[in-house]
Amino acid sequence: MENSFMVKNSFISIISQEQEGKEENKGSIEFQVFSFTNKIRRLTSHFELHKKDFLSQRGLRKILGKRQRLLTYLSKKNKVRYKKLIGQLDIREPKIR
Image (cartoon, rainbow, N blue to C red; front, side, top):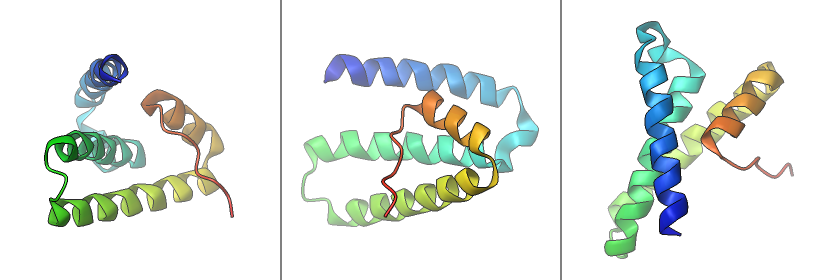
């Protein structure tokens, strides 16, 4: 578990360095999903120590919902960008109801 988390963190830092070079992309869907993913992973590791932090759990659920809505929008508008982003961030595809 620890090793996969460290690999994801190093991979995210590489992506963030690529994103930082492009200052005009701060409002892009990819950048927003990327920053939400960073927050989600940070909060998830926070909950390993603080299991009863219910306010942060609520914040995590809100961030998850925002990221899910952005990914749904992107998947409808541009499948290629969506698949690339899912692959880069190692996020599984949501189940279609």
